[in-house]
Length: 363
Ligand SMILES: Nc1ncnc2c1ncn2[C@@H]1O[C@H](COP(=O)(O)OP(=O)(O)OP(=O)(O)O)[C@@H](O)[C@H]1O
Ligand SMILES: [Mg+2]
Image (tube, rainbow, N blue to C red; front, side, top):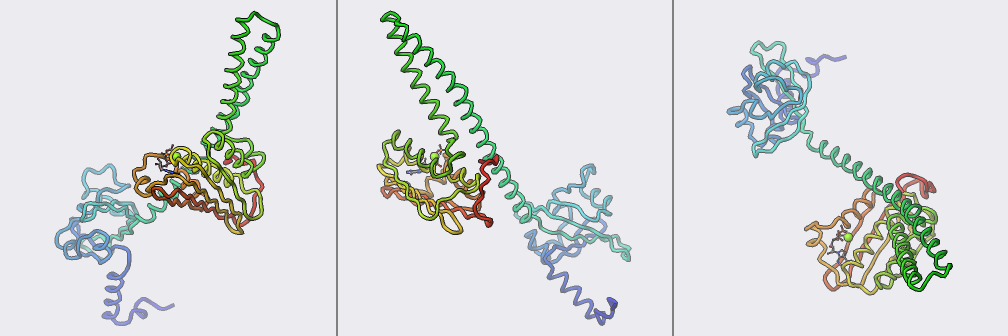
């Protein structure tokens, strides 16, 4: 094995190699003297902090750059912190930049053994990008759990409404019919008939609410039958003519995918019903080899997409996008005043193809 000396050649060559490394590495390197003044700084530190190398070396003390270290909580001053704990091989630090921002950095420090002046070498690595990625990953997970919990809760409430309130109302209806058959007086009969009507209406309302919360067709029969029954409800309630066109082989997708697509179409249809003043709505459902594309088109009054969504009052479109993103897909909304609205949903199919696990919790 060759030695450093052999590799580096003459001391001049070694010096220029060291200088080049110092100048070109992407990690920031700085040397501080025994009082904490910066005596050497490389270009990476200048880039990270916003101060020039000259400014750093001429004017800066390490404590002007350090906004705090995770490992240093008890010391009273920054200088104490650095110089009493210099043996820390690695630590996290918040680096202050010239424009007043801060960067999370991973730092390591070392004393040079043959330097009697007590200089400390520090290496800093900017962790902003990694932290951003981690934060996004965490938020992604959080959204996934929130949506999953919401679906579970909707399912539970729908079941309770159907089995609890629905059954109780049905028993009342049966009881009232028994009273009616007993030929009570005219006045009582009138009351009972009113109660029968009210109870029937309440039963219908409970059924509608349970269906909206979680249609059992989605679990039992799949996405397309559930969408068909949603379309019928929209047609009946809002007097909009709804068409569904299906292209490609009809099949079942994963529970998570069917639920997400159902909720996205449901929100798009609700928005059409609420705002579009549309008379027609068409849903194109394309089963492609590698993705599912659902296009929802209305002939309503349209809206200025960017302007409206940047105000961010509603959560519907945001939720549609989140649901699609969780499956690696997208939701694209195209609209303009007086030109109707088109919502295009694309969700890639997982590599293993069709999943028939329809009992998972994220339904
Ligand atoms: N099909 C459509 N036609 C006309 N305007 C629409 C349509 N879809 C959405 N919009 C407009 O976009 C806005 C944002 O929709 P979004 O679904 O995000 O929120 P919301 O429906 O107002 O509230 P939420 O969905 O949270 O109940 C709506 O308020 C409406 O102005
Ligand atoms: Mg909405």
